[in-house]
Image 1 (cartoon, rainbow, N blue to C red):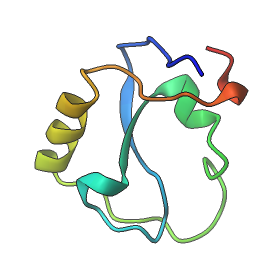
Image 2 (cartoon, helix red, strand yellow; image 1 turned 120 degrees about the vertical axis):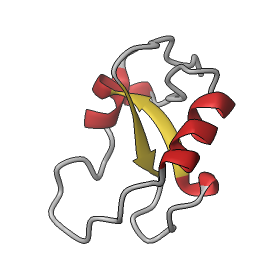
Image 3 (cartoon, helix red, strand yellow; image 1 turned 45 degrees about the vertical axis):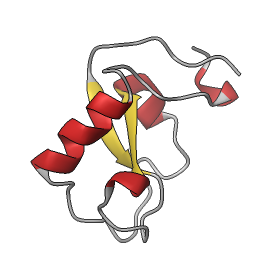
Length: 75
């Protein structure tokens, strides 16, 4: 699967709502890919925000670009 190549409007997404706030549960997504996740806008428990440190580490790991490989996003 191709990876999204967007480098702007990046957001840090929780892979799992109950997965905690560590780097292992963080996924860097552009706004379009974030909106296309199955949990975006769905009512339920909202996990606490990631710390600035985790956000920076996630962006660094992702090379400051979207990590999405979902077919449903159409990137």
